[in-house]
Length: 495
Image (cartoon, rainbow, N blue to C red; front, side, top):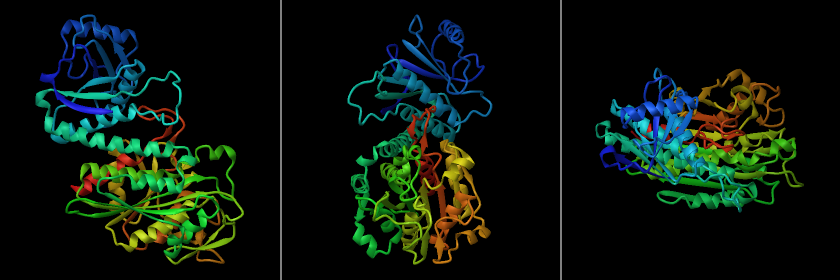
């Protein structure tokens, strides 16, 4: 979708579709630009349709006198008290979905806010994110039309001249970059697993372009690098594992961040085979890798003055005669040995290798993103990401970024006493705990062993990277979470 910001004095919109936000119980839409008679008729029409202004409620009307436009879409944002950016994000999304359902090509969205610069900028960002994300469809493998309307092609953000054009433009640019990054992550995760093997994922990473540079290490090289976890997990597949290193360096970087993304392009569970129904969405097991790629591309688009090093261990976890077996022992890049008791707990093996290499370069902070444990879904559902870490300031900053992005996170403790459950009788560690409890925390503790004293945070996105149902600005399938939260954090760090 193309997004344009336009001053109200330049709008000639009687032929267009105007999206206007409305609070619950309010007598008029926000910033209404039509006449009083037209407003009265509009309110009668939408109330007849049951529209009250609740969050994500939408109504399409056609004013008889085309004042202020031929079509008006009212988007509900809920009560004025406590009104935040997420309500605008959802409102813009459902309005764009309704416009697409009416077979329209574009909309003009009336900017609703005035006030301090930060508020205006955040509101513009949220509206643009909602418009783009709400219009998303994954159609790469559709050969015939099923009657589903296509996404909108363009949106105009229309603002009064006194609403702060500079801040609106800045917010819209950030929203566009963030939403397009989330779209990239969605596209990658939604790809069929045979279309995105480890090698093909590496090819996509190598084509990110701009200032993002890529190096891809093959199996022999990563074995020489001591990455026994990646090599071990990947040896059951006919598609060999690779290790992808990405680097983005902005002008005069202020800080250096390492991002590690789990890249299991398909997870069968290995010899500890998953049930058939549990494999149906396992192309999603590389959502961490997709997040790293998308965030780095967005950082380049925004020219952030930071350095980001991306580490992606990419494997398929498959059962075969050459696959690792329960009871095998692998040596990780950290030098530690691991007894593999469950081959379906493979993500921590490959991420631990990547983390060990990341901390060697002494970045200021390390963040890993992984669909790691089903326990995260059990504990927090599909709407909240689990977060743990060794640096409370880093964890707090990420939680704040998630809240701002509408991608909430909840901190779980790294309980030191639980480390005893990861000790093995035949190796340094075991990849599953002695007791079947606190599985998300146990996964975090396993990874913590690989980072030593580094400033580190772990995001378990097993519940949030994929959705089985449609949301205000998500389709069933890949969500693109937590791309926007991480980008928001990096923008703050970059200053």
